[in-house]
Image (cartoon, rainbow, N blue to C red; front, top):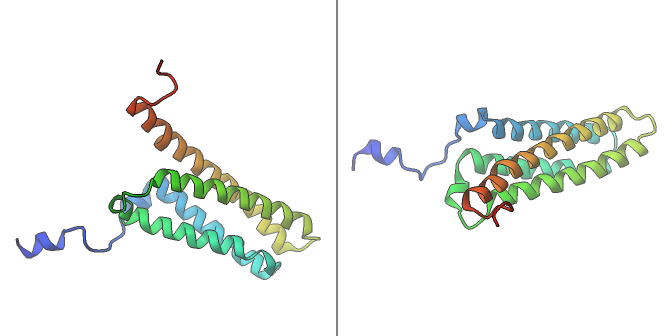
Length: 152
């Protein structure tokens, strides 16, 4: 085995730039940016709501690294589409509640209102991500394997 073949093996760590330019990569990057903006807005106004954007920022960053480095293909014991779907749905629910509460309690605070608006935008991004995961991964795979509801 030559040195070039050893360098091309899948044992190293590298990020796939094609994944980052794909729709899923851009959605994950948008989720990261919005979580960071919401975190900064809450840090400037209502520090008691910092946990939700910080935790979702870390979780989304972990998923971005796992998907862009193709580690999800190496760890086949987990159902990654289902895990990613549950991440998106739970984040959408959490940010919906946090955004409603932040908007209701803001009392004219610009940072809290901005965080609530970006939170509602992030709920839309997480909801679209969950829908796209459901549509492409879950229902299409069920149709391919013949487990769909349209079979008699």
